[in-house]
Amino acid sequence: MHALKRGINSIFKYVYIAKYIDSNPIDRLDLPKDTRTKESVAKLKQKFFILDEFNTLIKQMRHNASSDETHRKIDLLEFLFWNGLRIGEALALKWSDVDLLNGKISITKS
Image (cartoon, rainbow, N blue to C red; front, side):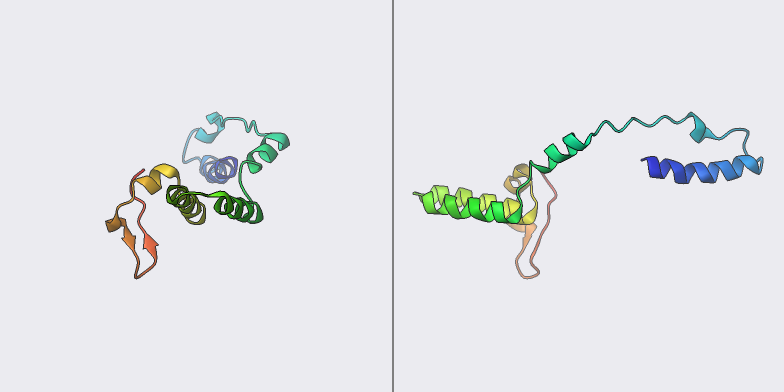
């Protein structure tokens, strides 16, 4: 947002200097402060699996799985991971959203 503000500000500054407008409206724009710290960014990054961690998790889960239902849940977990889907998006899918020939899934609901 700050980079966008700088770009727009340069345009309005030029227009103001050329006297097409009486004041630069961007001067009155206050953006929210970025409250992220190095610690909060690092903590956010810790919420995600790296590929090796995910593969180890799935391998261990499959080794310990004792029922077909558990295997289906693991399949769903892999599907979510590899396609970057949220659980609501995956559960809202219908066969009409899947194009096997072209390898595409249309995510239109959650």
